[in-house]
Amino acid sequence: MKSVLKPHLRSLLLIFLTSTGTAWAQDTTQVDVYKSPSCGCCGKWLEHLQQNGFQASIHEVNDIPAARKKLGMPDRLGACHTARVGDYVIEGHVSAADIQRLLKEKPKALGLAVPSMPLGSPGMETTKPVPYETLLVQTDGSTQVFAKH
View 1 (cartoon, rainbow, N blue to C red):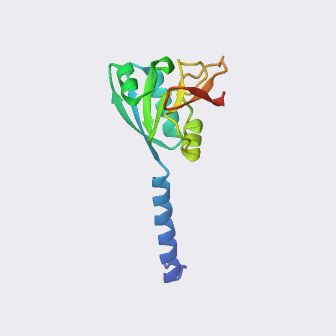
View 2 (cartoon, helix red, strand yellow):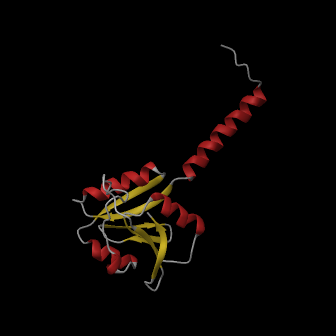
View 3 (cartoon, rainbow, N blue to C red):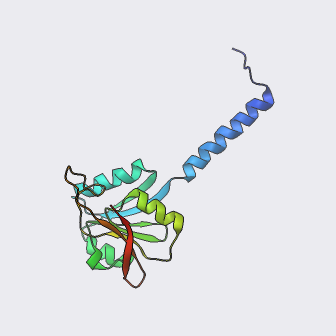
């Protein structure tokens, strides 16, 4: 079968397809997750991130508070997993949309936290969700509301 595209158009199409594929690959954001080997909701949160364009490296640890402390997140904001995305620390069941907004706005902060494990947050889906907040955590440990869910 003979190509209906002229050689120069085929070349341009090939360049476009190649460069578009590269752009898609660069849109993937790396997240390093520190979680307990036995935590099921952490796996569901990871699935949520991956479905929203994040590439996860999983570090199974037996001492989540130690991992949290090493990354600088205050214990009072603790949840069942801690992560690092770029220069930010992510604690708990923070939504992919909140992380994407953080990376876009680039505030001067330690990161984001959803303390505890609120029902209805990503990875904690339920038929009876409860309202919860995502907190922006400053480097001094103070917080302010970043998003309400």
